[in-house]
Length: 391
Image (cartoon, rainbow, N blue to C red; front, side, top):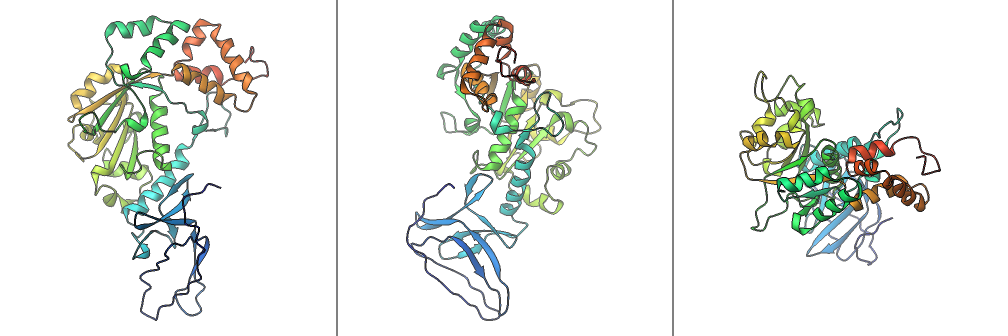
């Protein structure tokens, strides 16, 4: 089990009672660590409630409680259906009821983790799945706008030559970035309100969006920036008869009675608009809420990440009414290809992944395709044999 910082002082036995009509407002334990179960008795003869307590510790003048949730230590836990947190002077104080942003977000994150933690691989059988974290490899993403001759160089290169070209893009000169840095301040300290994530077909845009959602829900990405992150698939939005945002949130797992509370703080919301190039902009009965978000006519304080192919980038930039950060996905880097082979053959001997990669490198066209995520998935996700020359 993982450990988190805690005091080693032995915890005392404490009994607290309250008369009828009274409340216990605070339980203050100085320099103590609590493990196991805490019995809370609400009245004579009551069976009490069980509170699962992991650990908490003294930090900067406050008590910080840690609880294992979705693989991440978070500073809250569930007690009698309510999310609570420990504060000095307030004890086990209820910070919100079932309709609070805190409890709504926690329930929504559970929904997201279950929906996005697995992926179906190419040619997988019904019922077969793989955990996203076991397959995902960071892609080569840059912020620099490349010249036409640089793009032509990438298109005309194959095999080992393409590998060298992409290696030259993997550095500070081309401002390589990552999902953790998409909404980080720029050189002037300004945080972009919108990020335009461009990439060719099969470059891994949607795969990246899925990873962002999973990491956020697991607590490892943007934990202090966004209360809610929503995935808007443009291809599916075209089929929705009701084009209102409120209606769409219901399909995302938000309960009807929680919609108003979720939208109360738009500056804490991030919308991932995936596949703008597939969004129908014309011949619609009424403008879609996704367009209103882009034009800042709805929730102007919210944050946006929009994925698109380069062919639709000009139309997208005309719609965006706020300053935005441009990021382009180039696919896998050399290290990314190697890491993917290692993850795919993780159940085999390590030498097998190296031998398989060396075998692929002998075929220039096949090795070229490996830098495009969707093609690499197709090439490897076939029935395997112990002989890498046949896999």
